[in-house]
Length: 133
Length: 133
DNA sequence: CTGCATGCAAAAACTTTGCACCGCC
DNA sequence: GGCGGTGCAAAGTTTTTGCATGCAG
Image 1: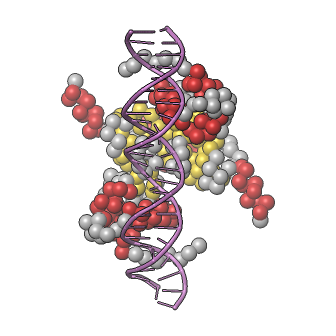
Image 2 (image 1 turned 30 degrees about the vertical axis):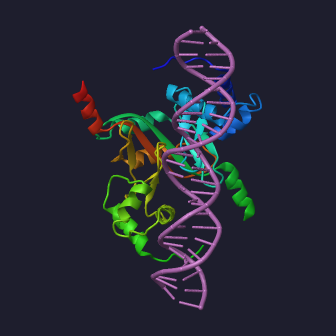
Image 3 (image 1 turned 120 degrees about the vertical axis):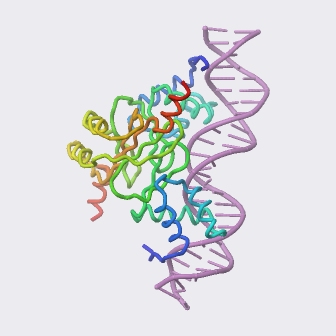
């Protein structure tokens, strides 16, 4: 594999992601990095996000609705996706329990990782719903 | 919401899905249904798959790589996705354990459902890997 | 009849890629 | 200078949608 050289654009992408906890899409990253690098291209953003995800420096989240999102928080945790507004929120769940469940699975293949998404209504949308009644 | 009328095309899609356990993509459904309805359009396939998923009659699986897949098996179960060949395999895990974990999550929103994907190498690819060595 | 479902095609949404150029080591 | 990264644009992939027509209830 080719050597990896540092670049200002990639640094800026990491900086931006580390400043957010709301799991931005590639396009949101692009729009924001443009404030600093007006000439950066969407292709570069995608290339770097893919690279960083492969390196394990960020996490890619496929919500199943709309564009993929990216999370700088690589510690084991899970995601909640609001079915009303689409926002993605970190969940603190003890991964150990789920990992214990995995070890009990009878499966001939080799399980190397897992992701879990929880769906429902986020606190914001719950509040709005109650107000509307 | 509008009333739902039965259609031969939708019936055929359900029939096809119920005959498979390999979680076909919309395109695979399309190609196969065309044997029976040569004039069916991809749009109709997508419309019906979305509808059925909303009704809870099938399950949509966003693997994060390539097109979404659809599963006729709506009983609680999880999916294994092979990182080598992309195949999707049903996993028999006791959902109750995971649901117990969920109830212990401290979260102000309302969790209504969850999905989990497990990644790794499927039995087939493991075998090939061993043979190649 | 009424209006939902379909076929068709265009377009939208999202992501990847080829290529020439730029800049770091 | 060599090689990886970038910008730009084109193309690829997957999914949605507008509209006229067809068919179920």
